[in-house]
Image (cartoon, rainbow, N blue to C red; front, side, top):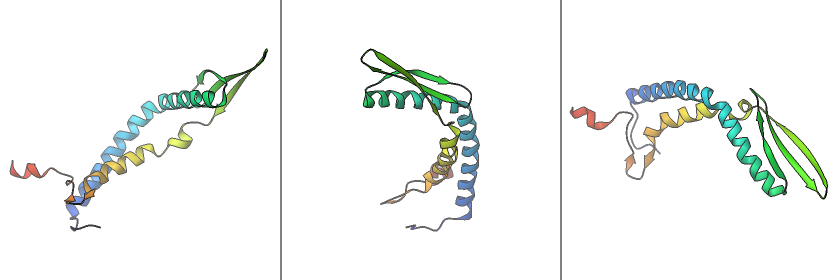
Length: 127
């Protein structure tokens, strides 16, 4: 529950922070999206191999497709299986938006003592 009414200036600064941080996080996300997909696939594939008692052979990552390769050995027989995975953009498209919203609302998080801070430092009023 808000204990203090927000001014138009506070709302404008919050919207400005959102717009700038969204552009920043979107730029960053477009640069690291492929590395994130490969790293996440690599980590989950190791966990899957451990849980299912199979061998993990590697990750083949192209532009929009990622494939995890497993080998199943039972006795003398071995079967190599490639698992095609969905493009990363299908399940992580909202990451920049989420980070921008968190950035914009961070300054309005309320604690038991009131607001943690404002979108602008209060120390700057005395300078």
